Image (cartoon, rainbow, N blue to C red):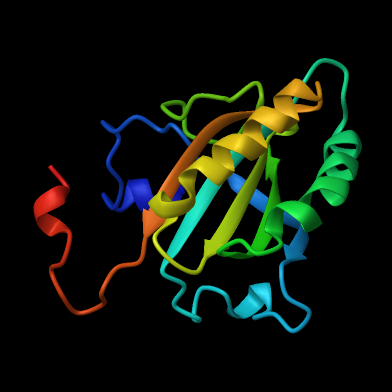
Length: 163
């Protein structure tokens, strides 16, 4: 990162809301013969949903994973969500540039990427229901959720919606 900025290949004026590294931790599939997570980005799913999940109170990631392990099979069944990849946040090193703020919650946060067969907005309520169930159970809280639709590579589709 220091080398990129030294070569004037960075943009110091931007705000770094989610700058970091993530380590793969686990996956869940809806179907018995799924598209492997390793191939999910090439599969051209119609959408993705990102959820940032933090344990509540004194819960550990193990507690959150155990709750999800029990809840996800029923939640995935019959849904357009084909698979989920979960990633653990790796705190940035002290050698990071000063303009990138340290995130005190990074060590407890997980990122879940849900690969969706269809428009993620059509099943957005399903993600809200999962988040509500987690929080009501006292296990975890979704601190940020965002749907993404697939781009049409080689076209300008959606460009008019950026600003």
